[in-house]
Structures are given as structure tokens and as C-alpha cells.
Image (tube, rainbow, N blue to C red; front, side, top):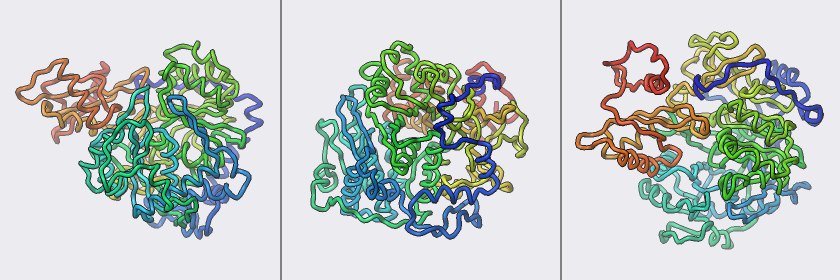
Length: 636
């Protein structure tokens, strides 16, 4: 969200939690817990780590000798899949529902913890039979199906490193991520259902593998049943492999070091190359389970619905790992929120008795357009908490969500965090007084501040850089294969102080509540998804008509931001509506639907610095009719 769309701080508008919510809450006193964590963070995190099962206890909670390459729970032996599944099989949770799934067409499946454990074991053995060993990377490119969760947990169980690529990305984006991770195994499906149409995942995967031929084996789930090409000796059907004797329901869990890698997740950066964010077994497991327990106050009787896609960090942390570590019951829905009608989500909440729902402002704004009549047709009284993720939520959407969906009973847990942070960083607890549009205050164990360019805390109401002043267990460990970029991107700005630079600008109000403004680099958030301008621009320039391109994000009521692109054409090409449409289709094919510009403007020149860097802030200011600021570095 840009400055133009950011609401002014309003400390008077407070929404107090009900006595019932406060009474149920795990944490009764935020200030006391925050103070205790701040005074002795290592003891605090050690206490949280005790809730997990370790094969060997750690020797040291935090190692800072190689900062910023911090290490957590040094010497500890653990496996996140053991904590998510194996340990529950020895308790009453063995027969508890772990996952309820509904397909877009209305088909359903239910997995107890025991059945999920069996399926994960079987697929773990399948991966081992394909030659996957501890530390090997496996790329997963699927829709919202239980098998995506099974594949991720199976990788974790055998010590492989999964790299999940969102099913909305196209050939080149998938190929780039396969190539960077050097994955020899790709797990995909014939197609995914979305809005009644088939998304051709296998067809896209085939082209990606052609462009990145490091892949030796492709495992294909049959979901849509439509005909797809299967390459002999490379492609295997999921169901065929899972029916083989090798797919035993007994699979030995790999004992992992706390700092062994768990997954790589690629996020857009300011250069054309996506960043492979690396997370590890120990600290990540401690962090995501702690934050879900505190913020959403999950109880054994809850039905938790994180409506994100498992292909993004929200899905990794709060669909796959944290809920299973806590032994919760999760719900997953395959399709679009408005298919076939705008009441699909509300129908699901009513039918399955969802108690806690976590979604993105984009989805809320999209459903707002259809009015209150659709949700009002359904009994939503099972809900007790709501949540928001992906971008700052504007007050109008917050109030609609609170009043129409939550019926003024359900506090909204508005969470700020990143792929890099692993889990929630700034978020309310159920007991926190809420202000629409603010993620409130840092969680216990997190020291966040808003500072100027020199690192001085800025006064209330003033914009600054959002920084995290001490390490936390869920933090990224590096950028895969590029340690130098990791240091440069996140730690170089305040290297002497040892602060993590989030890349977001923010402001604090008089109560210490933090209001996120938006990105300070060339990353656009569209519908909660982060896209690097470079990826969009590369997609445009790969078309023979385009000589040069620049992309910016502009505020949009529905999506948070839309992509607005500027293109300089090569000689021999002329601007036209037909060419604009062709370029949009080209970006859709090369990068993915989420990267398609809403508008492409053809120009003869772009504002650049003397060193040749495109000044996107000038383009944005012009598009918004705002002052262009300092133009001293602009080359005329």
C-alpha cells in the first residue's frame, strides 16, 4: 500500500475484545509476556522450544559468532515432520481429523492424523525410491490439493529440501526456480480446477523441464483426468507409485540437525533473479507453532481455515506446518472464493463449522463487492476469530469483515510478516485492542522499530524504515546459493547495529501501534503476492516488439496494487490496443497471470539516472499526480 492509500493514524478508533474472547485467550497479559521475552530472549525461546519433541536437546539457544548467519538451538536434533505427525500417532490425536478438504466441484476428503501419517510415509518411500536423499531438492508445482501437503511433509520426513512453486506461475518462472534449486525431481499434477476451468499444470511443467533439463523424474497426480503427455522413463503417475510395494506405510524419519535446511521458497527481488529464501527445521518449527498458538489461540476443538495457497509462505507456515505441530484440525478448499456463486466461502464456513478464518485483504475486498446479502444467507456463528495477511488491510475492508462476517464478535488478527521472517512478527493477540488498518504491536520476542536513514527512532506519526533489532528463531538463514546477496539485501544498511532491514516503510502512533505503508524497493504487492518489477519487465522485454520496459505498482481498491507498465517499442512496431493485448498475453505466458499489467503505456523515453537506473518513483509520482521530488540525478 502506498502513502496515498494509507489511512491516517487514528488512536481514538479502538475495538475492544469481548470478555468471552479475553477469558479464553492463552495469553492474558501482553505487556508482562513481552517484557519477559525482551529481558531474556534466549530463555523465552528455549521455553517455547520445550513444547516440541527433540531427538537431542540443544547445547546453545542462539549462536551469534557468524552474524548475520545466526544459528538457533545449536546441537539440537529434530525433524519438523516428527513433530507434525509422528508424535501425534502415539497419542489420542492419532484418530483426530488433521485435514478436511473440499474440491471446487464439491468432492471431499478427510484425513485423520493417522491416515495423513501413512500417506506421508508412503510418499517419503516413493521419493527415496527415486533417489532422493537428505539435502536433495524437490520442486513441487501443484494446486490446492492434500497431496501438496503430503509431498511437503514427505520431503521434510526424509530430510529432502522442498521448493514449492505457486501453481499460478508459468513456464519460465518455474524453470528458473528448478534451475536455481537444481531439483532432480518435480512433483506436479495433470491440471488444477479453478473457476470451473482446468489450469494446465502438467503442460506448463513439461515446458519448464524442457527449459531446465536438470529434472530426472516427474511425479504426476491425476486430478482433472484430462489427457496429458507422459514422457516414458521420466514421468510417473502418483497413484501408480503409491500402489507399489516400495510405498510402505512405515518410513524412517531422518534425524536432522536443528540448522539443516527444510525448504527453499522463492520470492521476487529487485533484480530479475528470484531469491531462494532458506528456512531450517529447528528454529522455524519453534517459531511458527509459537506464533500460531499465541495469535490465533488455537484450541483442540477448533476448525482452522487458512485460505491461502500452500505455494506461498502463508501456506507453508500456517496450512502445512504450524497447525499440524499443534495437532489442529485444518480445512482446505481447492477453488475460487466466488465459484460458482459469491457465497462459496460462507457456505463452507457454515457447513464445516469453521471457528478461525485467516485470509487476505484482496479476497475480503473482492467479496465485499457482492454486498452483505450473500454472507447473510449463512449461519456464521461458529466463527470466533478472523485474520488478515498479505498486505495492509484498509479500514473499509476491515470493518466489513468485522461487522458482516464476524458480526462484531470476532477480533481480526491483522498480521504483518514476510517469507523471510517465517511467521507473524507484528500482530495482535486476541486480548489486544484493535485499530482498523494497524497490525498493532510486535509479538513477544520481537524487537521492531521505525527508524530514519541513520537508524534513529522516528517520532509518532512520521514515516520511516521498519527494522527488526534482534534475531528470532523463524528467520531466514540465507539466500540459497547467494550468501553475499543475503548480507547485502537484509543486513548491510544497519550492519554496525546488527539490524534486519525489512524493506517496508511504516509509522508508529502514540500507542506504539505500527502502521505498514508499503515496500521501499522495486517490489509490487498484487493481491498480497510479491512481484519484482524486474520479473514483469523481463517478461515484457522478452517480446520482440519491446526495447525497454518499466513497471510500477499503483494503488487499487480491490487488489491493493495493480501493475502499470511503460514500454519503449523497437523500430518497426507501432503502438496499438492489439499490441497491448498481445504483450499482456505474453507476460501471462512467460511469468504468470498475477504478473499481467492492468495497463501498458507506450512511451518514447523513460526517466533514468545518469548511471542508467530507471527512476520508478518518478513514474509513480507522475501517474498519481504527485510531486516528483528530487530530480537532480535524472538524466535529461
